[in-house]
Length: 131
Image (cartoon, rainbow, N blue to C red):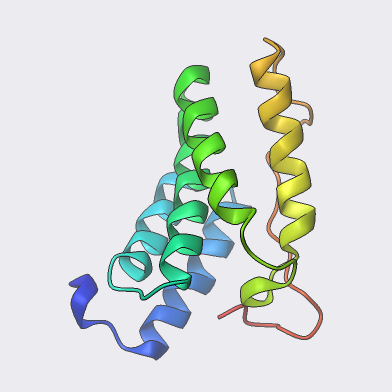
């Protein structure tokens, strides 16, 4: 699927799939799903999608033992996500950002992960499909 040719419905499905993939620890796959939505997106959604894509890529690096790449991408992605309201795109974004800050702080201080598993992206009650 060429990113310039996706419909709004396909974009919503790809975004939803990316959330599921991220939550399943499939960070590379989530990155790929979100990238297809991000590339043709208009602002401000383009910045949000780039940020969440960078976060997913960061956790892919973490899983491969690349702490420096993890910290760099997480910092960039988090900076973009900080620009958006707490319920943007139907997600509990502030909860996610808080967890990402904990991860970044731990790795920057030379510690390993602050939790046993990566953060999960939760939907707000009013947005069951997050698309």
